[in-house]
Length: 373
Image 1 (spheres, rainbow, N blue to C red):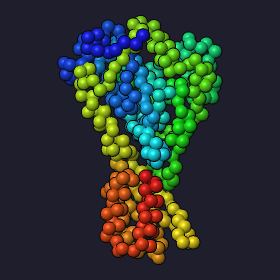
Image 2: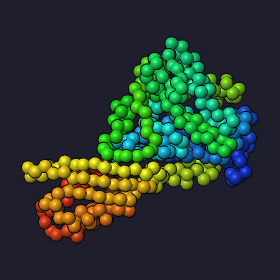
Image 3: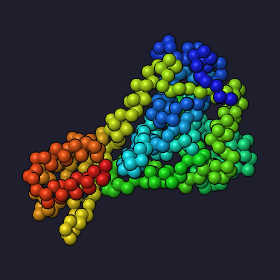
Image 4: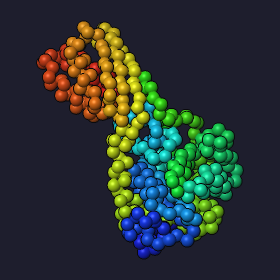
């Protein structure tokens, strides 16, 4: 049963002393089931971290359901250039988010259910949570063959991944979140999770590719609503709490004081790209220009999302050496980002002689460089 989460029927979360008096004022007797009314990935990730940071979970576990508009969510220690097709994402308006938990990259859309299990650190148990999801699925459709693996994934029919896991363990609190593929766009999932960028060397955590399938493809009655209700019911029975799914608005500062600033922080370039572990790009472009094949070499060291070392080389007869020197020095210290690179290269172009052939070559070079960003 869905009911709005308002101050009038406040579902009483006990918050730590550092939280302002507003918000969840009273105590929860046993536990809580929440569902976000937002499909914004940054807002929903902010709810996770607000609860983790501010709520006393002692004997009061929480299950949080949330779904997002199309987005790719990378793990805390991942490299987005290594994991995603950023060019395709920009063209399609697909958001990129970095979460605070570890693990691999996940495609989100309205057909992919996110579940976050909040407990104290001592009660943290990923396998127990996954087994609960399996019981819920079997309660709806007993014929389903779904098993939890040692990697804390859920497999359908022994081969199709329908759920992946990540977690964050704090000093006293912890959360385990997982996905559940119901009716996700598998074409988008496949294309966006395929990085086209060559020559990246990095120690960042890498994702493990898997064959996936939607539960709705297995059984057309397994809609997102059916699955959410089934998991909520099983969770409520397991924890002996009311089977109510409480709807929350993750932008409501009266319930979650300070949450909007957290959501804004999760959207910043510094968090999404700047927190990427140091990496390098060593690649070569082949350019065909007026019947001539040319080789352009690019070496970049990137730290905190910014170019620390830049070395772009091309044949001397194609462009004057001083142009490469200007480009290398101008890009050093800049964001590894096509927007900033476009601004820099446009400014540099104004300092070049008015020469149509020179400008044409310059544009080819700059487009190639932006193509690896």
